[in-house]
Image (cartoon, rainbow, N blue to C red; front, side):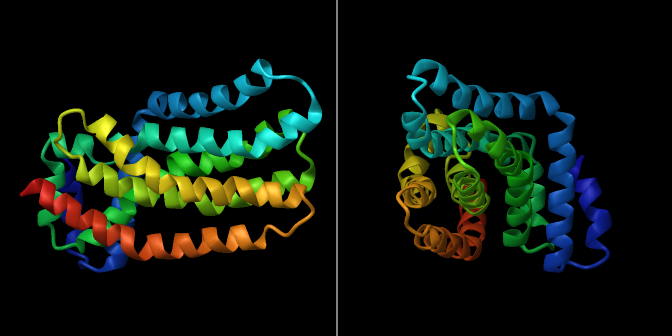
Amino acid sequence: MAGAGMSADVDSGAGVGAALRWSVERDLRLALRSRSELGVQLMFYVIVVTLFPLASTPERMLLATMGPGVLWVAALLASLLSLPRLFASDFADGTLEQIALSPFPMPALVFGKILAHWLTTGLPIVLLAPLLGIQYGLDGTALWIVTLSLLIGTPILSLLGAIGAALTLGVRGGGSLLALLILPLYVPILIFGAGSADAVRAGLSASANLSLLGAGLLIALVGAPLATAASVRIALD
């Protein structure tokens, strides 16, 4: 039971660092036990990105134009696909209530779960992006910018998605509602992320788009764990 594993760490203190470490390690262990689920999400990303060149013209200029957008849309959908597993299983078996009652700070516990989600979903997407981008004829600079934008942007997808996942806990049809809540928030991230590579292709600097993504990440890092923790407590009441 998750509560038993937590009690051992609680004795060493209920600090933010202890809470974060326990939460990340626990969720990573659980994620690695269900490797097939993680594999499905990554295969979904790979298949979606690969299908577009097959379904469109092989003209290099067109592929290079649509490549960054496809990589970002596929990353967004893969992140959305994995969001229900953030809290659903812990909510169903009562573990989430035990976590909420622990002496650990709830925002730190929630942030640990979000970080583990990004490490198992967002980070593999970032690592696969340069390889998948080659089939769109992207040059080295464009590949680097797309990868960097995904590295900055995918944590925002996990942070914002966690808020939606917490708000829809226990709601019938929560998956559809989650998509409706989160997709509008994802749109600016998608625009700035894909736009960074477009700026480079147009001979402009990508620094403006990357700076906006960085600012969004800082805001999400501060606000999302607090909002998610509050939403979890509301769902448990």
